Length: 103
Image (tube, rainbow, N blue to C red; front, top):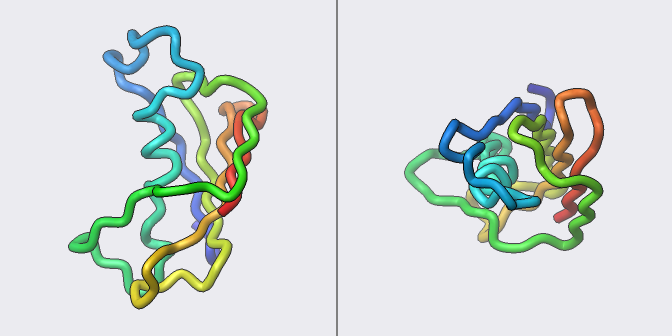
């Protein structure tokens, strides 16, 4: 954890790993882009925040079963606003970047 940023190691369970043929597994992508809600000032788990759009997405590699998700606040994120904005880097455990997501 850092000021305005968080890093997490995430992985698919056995059922997700058996789900072959997906370049960007939807369950892994969902949690990788939505896990750091504590970066929203005043966040409480009683309010649902979900990824609804991206400004820019660059895909360099398929997502492996294990990834590192680096989420950074890219705006003045607060619960008194309708939306929150983040920049996200998804990488392999060795640091190879798989995706860059802005906004």
